[in-house]
Amino acid sequence: MAGHEHVHDCGHDHGAGAEASCQRGSSSSELVRFSVTAPDDLLRRFDEQIARRGDVANRSEAVRDLIRASIAKEQMRTPDEHVIGSLTMIYDHHTGDLTRRLDEVQHDYTDEIVSTMHVHLDHHNCLEILALKGRGERVYELADRLLGLRGVKHGELTCAATKQSLGL
Ligand code: NI
Image (cartoon, rainbow, N blue to C red; front, side, top):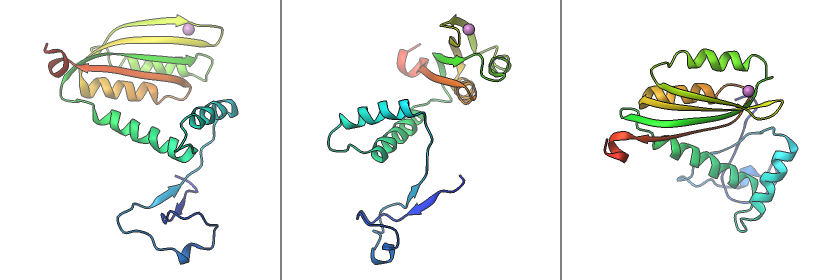
């Protein structure tokens, strides 16, 4: 990550240059500051959501919560199980060669993709829904590859492990 900056974790609010006067607790992990760019209307809506939370109403804490939730969600994965699920994506089909790349990835998973539905939402946006089944490892890999493509605005994989959750 280019240009990130280590921030010590003393819990005090002070300016740069005062760090030497603070002791960092041995049990806390080091904080790292990083910058994120986002469209201003997206950030404004996020800030409005944060403001409704009251006590922990700050952007950093809200982003930390999102990161924890993302990691927790990944830990729910069952790569060794047979899973069934669906992947929903919304993207702008004008974005570079996105449609070609989406197609290319999907052709590597012909055993896992049972069916696809494509809806042209408006002039720019497409909704694509994939019905999936197969070994978890393969299904998650497919979802990660598709959702990782630049230009996919929204993506959500919903999965159930067939043995564990459904008793199949
Ligand atoms: Ni379309």
